[in-house]
Amino acid sequence: MVVLRKAIGSFDITKEYDKLRGTKVLYVQSPSDKLFDIALSPGYVSDMRAAGVDITYVELPSNKGHMASHADAALWAPILGAFLKRLS
Image (cartoon, rainbow, N blue to C red):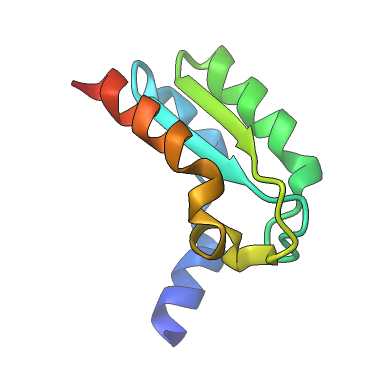
C-alpha cells in the first residue's frame, strides 16, 4: 500500500492525454468524494476531449464519498452496461 500510495502521488497523466487519443473512457465521480475533488472533473473532461479521448462523464449522486462507486453500484450499473456495449 505504501508503494501504491507513492506511485499515485507521483503519477500525473494530465500532461499525457494525447496518449489516450481514440480511447473510450468512463469517468464516474461522486460529489461527496473527499479524495478526488469533483470541482476538477470538468477541466479533466474538457482536456481529455480536446486530446481526442472519447469520454463519458457521470456524476454519481451518492453520499458514500470515495466508496460510492461500489457502495452505490446499482445507481450507475445501467450506465456501465451501456458503456460496455459501446466497446463491442
